[in-house]
Amino acid sequence: MKRAGFAGFVFLVCLAVSLSLVAAQGIEDTPLPPDATQSPIITPTPLPKPAPVHVVEQDGTVVELFFNSIAQGQVGLVHVHGEGIAGARARLFNNLVDFFPIDGDGFYGLLSAGMEQNPRTYDLTIFAWYEDNRRVSIVIPVEVVRGNFIRQEITMAPDRAYLVDAEIERGELARLESIFSQYTPERLWDDKGFQMPILNSQLTSPFGAFRNFNGILQTRHTGWDIRTTMGVPVMASSAGVVAYAGRLDIRGNLVVVDHGFGIYSTYSHLSQIHVTRGQSIVKGQIIGVTGDTGRSSGPHFHWEMAVNGDFVDSVQFTETWLP
Ligand SMILES: [Zn+2]
Image (tube, rainbow, N blue to C red):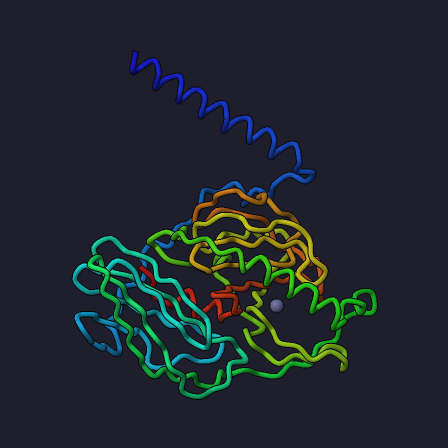
């Protein structure tokens, strides 16, 4: 009886999978390029765990900082542990950051500095609480250092010059902010970390650049640009749930992936989107293909990461070890 029940379950699962495949094919108007059918690509070797840079111990609570300072637009990892610890969080620049548990290894939290955070020393307050209701708070000075950002003059072609508009830009950033504020208190990324969304990527325009569009709009570059042709498969940087799949004025066809604990990745200017909102995806899964939609002057790929609502340097992020 048990076996029959299991077989029935397997059949139902297979039926559900084939039905969803039919549904997915039904909404695709263009066939996938041959490359897009390849199986997910997983980074072969996850980053090794680094040694902490600073260790602070107080009242049985150990705080390890995996950074010396945080540059504007970058992230810094913190580890908190102690006998019987039940939870931890941190406050930095009036942001509260929840820490995530790792089995038998206490709690980890990812701090972020926005690209416009004033460079100086701030108080980082770590709060830890224990099974016996003990509470510990520890204040550690953390320095934010100036980011290394370039300046760019960009000319948009007349047919898309209407997108060089402060109102459109503000509206789109507000839209993204509201997506990033949907906080999932769950670690959705996998233990192999984050990877570049396009294989053999050639990075072009850097994160954080001060940009002047057509001599009239001053703005910041919120991600990295990757040189590409049309129709190149774009992979999810890590596992997560699709938080947005649709079209915005500046980013064009856009996918946003929620990785949990306030970490998001975005994939812009796509010609096709192959996922839908609410869908769970694995690391390396192809979520769409490159294009030239939105405020773009030729096929390229714009890749963003956001942490705690701040856009952060996506390349530095993938080079940061995460448990
Ligand atoms: Zn870009």
